[in-house]
Amino acid sequence: MNTIGIDKKKAKSLANGLNELLANYQIFYTNVRGFHWNIRGDKFFELHLKFEELYNNLQLKIDEVAERILTLGSTPEYRYSKYFEIAGILEASQTSDGMKDVNDIIEGLSSLIKRQRALLDLSAEAKDEGTNSLMSDYIREQEKLIWMYSAFLNKSIA
Image (cartoon, rainbow, N blue to C red; front, side, top):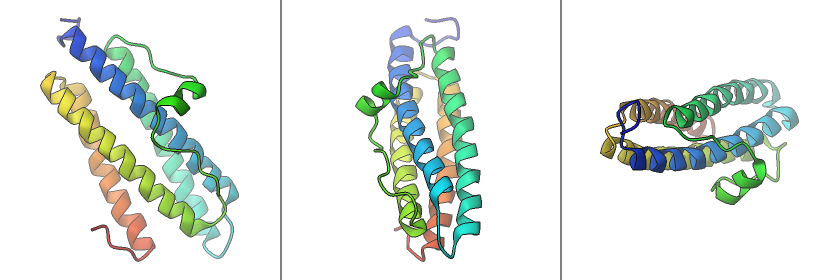
């Protein structure tokens, strides 16, 4: 057991999963920053503000995930070269069409939720309430964001 009472092998496995999540968060964050900077069109003011709210929120989560990795006794990855190797979220290639950007945000959030659900399983098995609680909070918040962004596009989330 490590100092916080989690099996060392399970803590390492969780940290690896969190590093993968961190890579996805970092790329998603950068995409949303690009959407914010480059948005144009009739929804500029609304989306410019929403994208800023989202990237500020993502920045906090990036820090929390990195700190959780440290709490588990591992080192958070910080190199974008590694992020590109391990992340499932890709760099956005188009950043000025607000409707496409919102679709990309929905896809990014959905991808994060899937990874966080997998981490919930690992954290439950390791009896790691800290990671479990963090992932649960993120999932709840991001599910609501998907609903809201989908409503903006007049799309069903089903």
